[in-house]
Amino acid sequence: MIATMTKNDPHWVSAPGVVSALTELSEALPDGDTTPYPDVSRLRMLVRKAWDAIYIHYLGMENLAVARGLARTGTDLFDRCAETIGSIPIGEDADRRKALDDSIRFRAELAHLLLEEGDDAVHRRVFEKLESERLARGEMIR
Image (cartoon, rainbow, N blue to C red):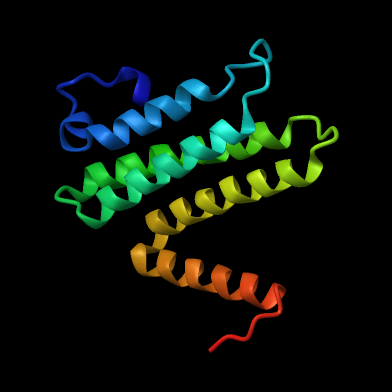
């Protein structure tokens, strides 16, 4: 979808920041076996940037079909990122790669929730994750 957009496309016209972030992420992903493994830290940054753009656009949406289309494209790209990172040999930096992988998978999960259940489900999931992280660190929940 991203590769075929023009400046006259309704998605581009209504959300150039989202389209730009998704295009940048799409271009960072390998295309088959010929491309070397991507920089995982950069992928994580691009996923965060794209997620933020999608979510902000979705919350202020004027056209639900466009917002959902962009979220669906983002979801597909986030899933591809998670698959790509999962295929990278672990090597010496296993803990760091796992943390980056978890971060990308979480944003993929949020994008799926946004599409399937809306922004209230996203808010609940983020709160649940924050609570579980605090419990894991032994902090009291007020």
